Image (tube, rainbow, N blue to C red; front, top):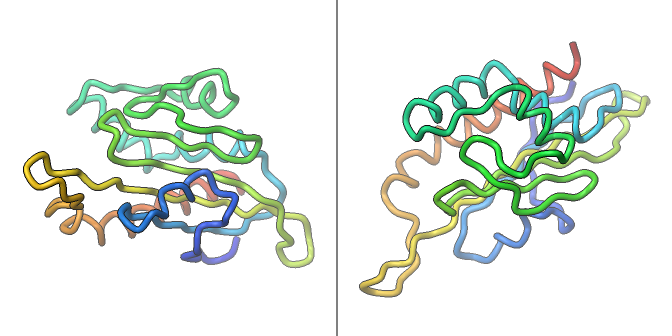
Amino acid sequence: MTAIQTRTLPDEALLARYRDGRSYTDCYSVDVAPVVSHAAYVEAFYTSAVFKVERQLLAWFVSRPATDQQAHALATGQLDAFSAWTVEGRSANQLLLCDFQNRTRSWLMTSAVEVEGAPGTRLYFGSAVVPVVSRRTGEARMGFVFRALLGFHQIYSRVLLRAAASSLQQ
């Protein structure tokens, strides 16, 4: 497994529609061997021990529980809602989810790469945060909470991606 990289969103990314200058977007990747399917990646991501903590918090605080079986169904295209998210876009190698408040997006993508001379997979994970438009001024703003949590979000994104990659290599 290679180190996690911060990347520019690929042009074909379903998340790229949020590179509008108003929204925040990020993109991280890691290369793993052997080749893994997109469905296996999505399932590994949402069933990792790290993400299960987030799932539990969502169950407690916003009454949006989710199970490993639901993660599998999401990964295989049999489910379009998972915990606090609904599917906004899906393709053979991508999944774009929107949160129940319509503020954030989570994106997973796979692509074929070579890892140390052998076939492998690049795992991408990215997010978008959409600004809130003030009813009073009409101005789009990210807000204090976004700015306060951005550093944590960037670290947490890498931790989630590393957990999924590690799971796929076991």
